[in-house]
Length: 121
Image (cartoon, rainbow, N blue to C red; front, side):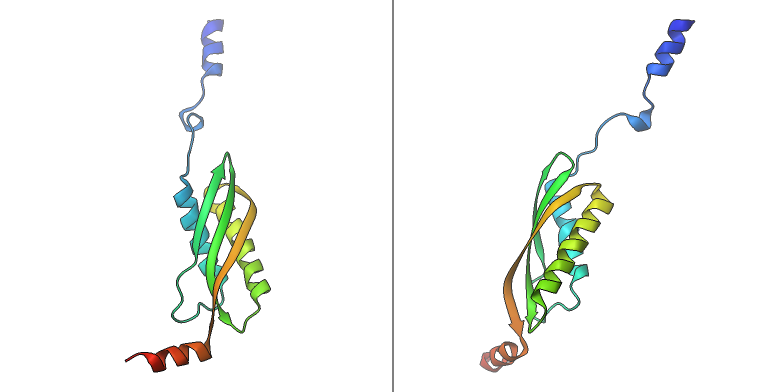
């Protein structure tokens, strides 16, 4: 009888067994969507933010590439993106994000869009 109680106490409930693995590309999609959410305005004609992620244990290092309007508060927008990405990855994937690198690939100005439109035939 005592052995049965010990075995029952040693059993792990079904909900407590196993492991969850989240692929890097899934975390990258979460990060890219979070970057879109963080940007006040996405410039017309720009590409959507993209993210690459490296996951190690329960930590994700994120690199986000994006395009911004010009003129704008580049530092403020990048800070908002870093904060939102870290927050959403933690909330949705349960991973800490010690680093979010933001790469601004291009600045879009109203003047350059007008000039480009004038060249299109």
